Each structure stands twice: as C-alpha cells, then as structure tokens.
Image (cartoon, rainbow, N blue to C red; front, top):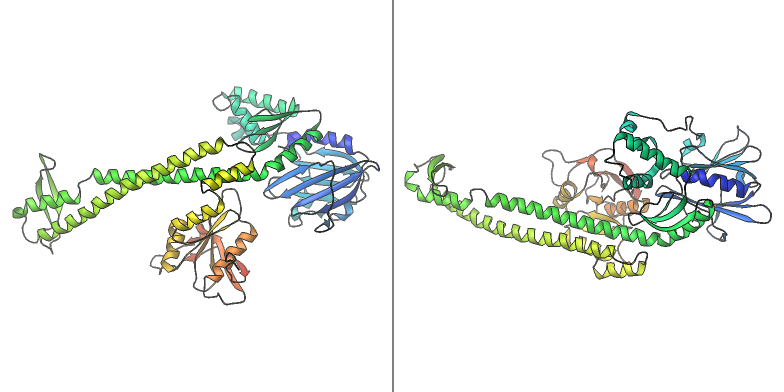
Length: 525
C-alpha cells in the first residue's frame, strides 16, 4: 500500500514540508529498474530510491545512500539542479509529483504495471525525459480531469468498486466488517466508513496478510507494528527494510505453498477420476456377464445372427439384447469377451490402487501445508531446510518432474521447460500436457522438438528464460549446427493440429520470431 493513493496523499504534504528548498544533486541507477534521486539543502541530504519494475514498484526513503563506482549510470540529466517547491499526489491515482521552482516537474508513476518517472522541463516546448523510454505515451500524462469517484451500474450493486484505490487491503478490511452479506445501504455505509478511515488514518500498520508483509492504513490481517499516522516518512523507513529482509523468504514460502496446493489439487482430481471410472465399471454389465449369457444360450443363437435377446439370469425377470458379429461364431465372441473381462479386472484393480495412491498423495500434501504454516515466520534458513527435507527444493522438484513426465524437463528461474523427444511425443506434449496459456516454441521451417514453457499465474516469462528455451528449440532441431536459428513462439492456444496431420505437425498462428544460437544452456561444461 505505500504506492496506494491514500498513503501518497499523506506522504505528499510530509515530503513538501521536508523537501521545500532542497536541490537535486544526483539522479542515477545502479540496478535494473532502479532510480535513485539525491537532494540536499546544503547541510542535510535526502534520498528517494524507486524500483520501477513491471513486476512491482517500491518507493523507499533511505536515510543515507552510498553510490558505487561501478555499474552506475546517470539519468534524467535535466533534473539536476532543480529546487523543490512542493510535492503532490494526483487525486485517486498512484502518482506522486514533485514541483520545482521555475515550473519544471517530476512525475513518479507508481503503477503496478508500466511504472515510470517522467521529467517535464519548465519550457513547455522542451521534450519530456522518461526513465522508461519505451512507454512514450507517459510523456502526455496529466492528472485526471474528474478526480471524484463516479457511480456506475456495477458500483451501484457493489459500492466498493466506485473506489478502485481501496485496493486488496481495503477489500479485505471490508470483509472483516461483514461487507459481502450486508444490504446495499449497509454496504454504502461501510465503504464510506472505510474511505473516511483511509483519508484520515488513525495509524499506519505493518501487517502480514496471505503470507506477505504489507503496509496498510487499516488494521487488517496480522498486525506486526503500529506506527504514528503523523510521520509517513518514518513509517515508510520502518516498513521498507522489513519488506526487503523478508522478500526472499516470502517468495520461497509462496512457491512452496503453491507447489503443495497444486500437488494436492492434481492428486485429488486424479483420484476422483479414477473413482468415477471404477464406479462406472462396477455398476455396468461387464464383459464376463455378457460372455456367460452367450454360452448359456448357445442353442438359441442362430448362425450369422447380428443380435439375440435372452433371459438375463443376473437380473431375474428381465431380458437383454446382446449384439453379435455375424462373421464369427458365438463361441468366438464369448472367448473375446472373456479376454476383455480379464483385462477389465486388471483395470479395475489398477484403478483402485491408483485412487488409493493419489488420495494418499493429496492427504500428504495437505499435511505438509499444515506443517508449512507452523514454521517460524521469516526464518529463511529453517524454510529451506524443511523444503530440502521434504524434497520440495527446486532441484528435487525438477528431478521429480523429469521422472513423472515423458519429456525432457529443464528448470529455469522457477519456470519449467518441457522438450518433446520425437514426433509422437511432440503431439503428446502439445495436445495433452500443454496449457492454453503456456508458451510454445519451435525452430522455424524445420523439423524439431516442440518446446513448452509452463505458465506461472501472474508472472510473464522473463526474456532470459524465453531465450534459453528458444536455444533448446534450436538445439533439438535440424538447425542444431547452424550459427543462428530463427525460433517461433506463441501461446499454445494459437497452436492447432489439423485433421489428418502427421504426428508432430501443427498449424501456428500469431507467432513471433526470436533469433538465437542453438545450444543446450543447461548442460554442464
């Protein structure tokens, strides 16, 4: 919530009071998607450190900052020398604006996706300077014309939707107040109450919610610290170090939790499918019963008959029609049915064993989830030891996946990359194992393996992972010995197999092309 409008409207006046008259003396970056701004009034210094990444933004106000001599790049040169006049938060938006004496301004766009920093010189004719130049439209950003929340047909039935700045923490707090089952009039009152609390918070809170450390203006989740609402700068300085210290722990915790939840869900689903199939086999007339009826009524079956109606002694008082093959004798038909019955008996036994095994896997995963919840909060070493003990670390997960799946399996930055072994195996990978949102790759215009990067919800495939998967697609193709290989990639939903196509043949739509050096980057040198 530090990038939430309701906090920014508290932070902006505090920054104005702190920074009025301060001059920008440094603006640089030392890490990807990082912007560091240093200001001074001649005696004291003040630092703003922003992470402007598509995966998430973070505004930090470190009390001091040491610039390294290497891997440091100066940015936004026209910003240097500007003297702060005021700081403002755009109404109902995640944007902080620094206004400078003389008319220049710096817009800090703290959106969860497509964040940016835009410097507008005092001269209106001068071009804006962008931290992320690829977002060219940000040069025309301006405060909303109608800052007040507007009613809509949706917000009339759900008043909270008229205030998108509430965010997930505001929504979670409303749920604790009984929002969902309340009447429409009560919902309006609750939303007005929460908005009032956000506009004039009693305190700032560091909380844990959903296994994440969060900054909140509302007492929601597990409250770890309560900070005075009169000092937003101090509150932010308390929160950010705690967040950064726990980031690795919470990321790994979510990974393990998602892995176990997925394992439990998949095992429970597989067990249910096995039980359903078993029930169908046990509650329908089996091959053995049909064969017994044929043998018991041989004398009543004329030669070359296509069907015969006989008394069903398995269901007294009922008759049953049995389909026959005119080209074979009833004895031969019964013999084939007895053979099928033997296979069906084996299938029934295997289904029961599979259902029991998969149910045990589901219960085991649920028990591990309970153990995970009981681990000491914030202790990364304990989490990693527990993860290794239960073979839930990345290496063990990759090994298990490789043993379970009939494909080559590689693990890269938490993403699984599957590579088909042959034409038939390619079909199995693309048509049965790949999800519609997985990324599908193949060497362009030559035969080769299908390659799939499995989707991770809410996480786009990083460029390095995509490049290494493309290298695999090139390596496992007829272009393996080429110096460069074009590789096509697209979401799997745009890959289809035409009727009658040979194994491995597909039609690809909306593909993009990546040029890579054929290699297996996961082979040890």
